[in-house]
Image (cartoon, rainbow, N blue to C red; front, side, top):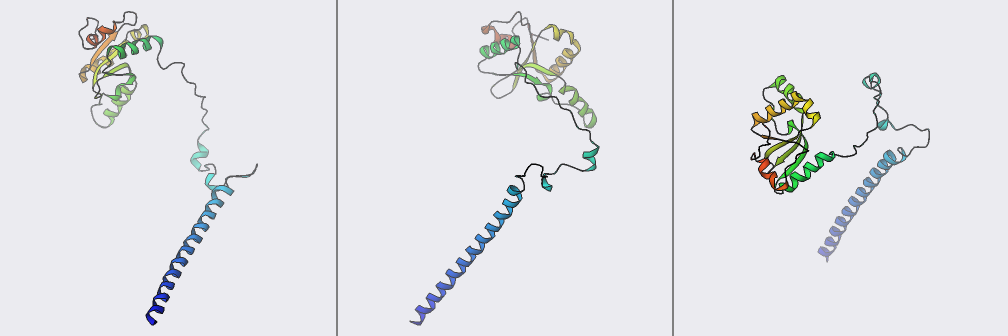
Length: 203
């Protein structure tokens, strides 16, 4: 009988310890929740004219005071991502090369690696970033197959830019194809055109 009483007493002590631990944990969670509610609810939901709490206050550091307020013009979305002639050429490339990926308005920095070290490399990266290519044709593994540039009056006036892009692509071993938007190849001719089998290909 004595061992039975000892067993009951042991069980009672264990139950009390567990209950007391859970009660303490619940009390700590309740206190933490109350502090959180006080910090982020009671203080953020301010009445008119009240000041923000310190963690939401404006930056009053000397650097912030000395910096002039920037005047940013509102952003306006372009009417179209591609013009009508560029859109037509894009769809022609997609139709003629269904097993390829076509990308428009790609920066030279996406696939031309700047040479040199330090300042020289940084300068070349800046220059490459100034140039975009009309279309880039890739295979399904995203290997660049060719670059397509649209021949327009605006492009002709930037002859120096065109020469620079052509030279960079030539050094990288990437085919450059120039297309006159007023004399587009037929859909069944696009693949041969891009592969360099057309007399209209660019140098």
